[in-house]
Image 1 (cartoon, rainbow, N blue to C red):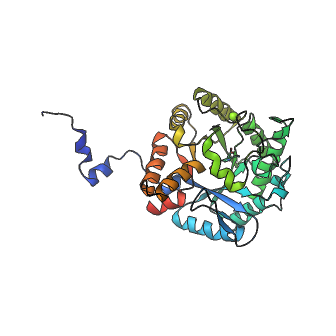
Image 2: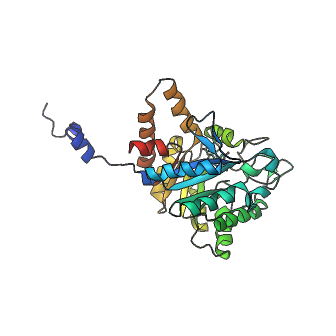
Image 3: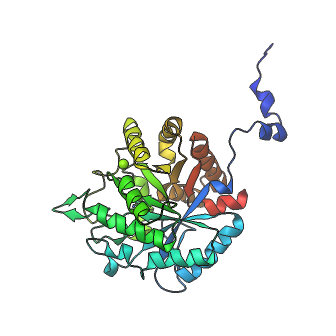
Length: 323
Ligand SMILES: NCc1[nH]cc(CCC(=O)O)c1CC(=O)O
Ligand SMILES: [Mg+2]
């Protein structure tokens, strides 16, 4: 054949393939979510997330050192609390002597160069397992803000670099920005969970924290997976309210949303490659049904190609080793 255009020419050798590669992953793209728990010398594996552990603070410090040695420098912390610490108003979330704030402080003292991202949501501290205050079976929007403001301020005081309001209720970013600014924390950034969907892929995370809702579901606050134009409204509001990053969550089933936000906003776009996405690849790999490492790298690459500048992923350590 007399073909002028032969795309295969640019795939003919490793050198050329490498030269024309459009997207490259870097360990600096990653944020590692970590589960923390009370006690000493605890490293308990999450049964639905092989290779992912809940750490007590002493062992967490070794883990962070290992990650830092691999080039991972940002950590998003999630607390696993005993039921006795939970209540209707998530009061433990701003207890200065509690697990979460103590952990932030200790990490920042020991590793001044790492960045700590926090989760600003009631669910791990709530006896209802919901992200907001519950009254008569309803999840309240505005009254929950006071708790979130206290939580975000306490996290900033403990040394948080980025706070992550993750409850997908309205007015979070603006309110938290105001509370942080009034407290003198102009430099603490907000990564808003701008488009977070009511997803089945959070199952293993709720196992890890024992934080599943005690009744109902989260569909009155998290988005309907069928919607994409609504993501633009959510992102626009968070932009106007002062968000520094816009996040899409989950990642793999929502690559179109990542691209949509990347095309329409000039803030950094983050994607949360969630617990269920991790669990699926791990389970298939353990069964010998696919090559786990390749599936991991391909998924992370796809998330970046779609337009995520920042990837929150439980694969961060494993991927960093391969990079
Ligand atoms: N504040 C809730 C929160 N923050 C992060 C995750 C999920 C993360 C994951 O699945 O890895 C969730 C779960 C939920 O909405 O129930
Ligand atoms: Mg919103």
